[in-house]
Amino acid sequence: MKKNLVQIYSLFFSALAGLIFGLGLVLAGMANPAKVLAFLDLAGLWDPSLAIVMGSAICVGVVAFSIAKKRTHSLLGLSMNLPSSRIIDQRLVIGGLAFGVGWGLSGICPAPAFVLLGFGSIKGAIFLGFMLIGMGIYELIESYRNLERNKTSVAITNVKKSKS
Image (cartoon, rainbow, N blue to C red; front, side):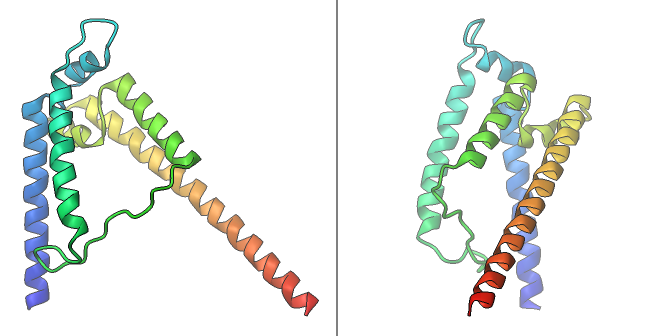
C-alpha cells in the first residue's frame, strides 16, 4: 500500500511540476515561436527579454542541482538519478548543434512544443512529429552501434580463446 501511495504522490507532483513549468513557459513567452525567434535575431530587432528568463532558470537550476547532489533520495524516498558524465564528445556536440538549428529555424524547443500542442497549434504538432522521428533515428543508430560493439567484443573473446 505504501509503495502505491508513493507512486501516486510521485505522479501527482510530477504532473504539478509539469503544469507549473508549462505555465511558466507561457507566461515568459517561451511558448511563442515569434518571441523566441526575435530573441535569436541578433541582427534584426533583438528582443533580450528571454535572456532574463534563461538567466533565472539557470539560477534556479544551479540551486536545485546543488541541493540534489547532496541527496541520495527524493523527498518521496525515490532514488536520485542525476547525470554523472562530464564528457564532451562528438555525439553531444552534434546533438547540441541539431537542437540549436531546430530551435533557430522554428523558434520551438521540446517543452514549449508540448505547450503548443496543448493549445492545438499545428506548429507544435509538426515539431513534435519531427522530434519523434529524430528520436527514432537516434535509437536506430544506437542499436546499430551496440550491435557492432557486441560483434567486436565477441570476436575479441573468440580470438583470446583460440590463442589459449
